[in-house]
Length: 173
Image (cartoon, rainbow, N blue to C red; front, side, top):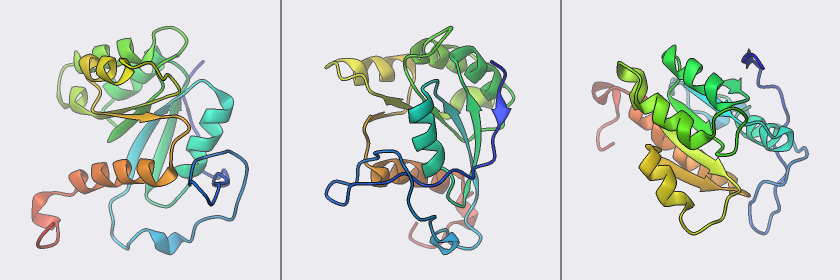
């Protein structure tokens, strides 16, 4: 399936007020003022083949400050990263073609700075060694489904902060 740039117009996911976990569905759109003026936009490659997971992640990324591209499989993910247009990859592990671990290995073998893109595993796998396997493949971070929106936002905020040149960061940052 070819990659498609998708406008981020999906509604944000519904959350359970008790635990803040993504549950899918709809809610009110976030206030655009949530992103500080002048904060850099980050480019996110979302690698997911499950329609429900894709919808939930797209909704989170519909907030101002994110530019999102979708890849439905591992091969498409490697091709997208090779173009050098992304700051972070949210990578499912179970994908058609090659899985997320193999896609990450191939990304890390790319020439040039693209191989250093920040990769976060987003997976429902719950085996005891899945986080170790993700790190061994070259992933920078790991997020299990269902996830707390605040945790994903924190991981993306760290990537956004690292995208700001040191000279442009506020004192004490």
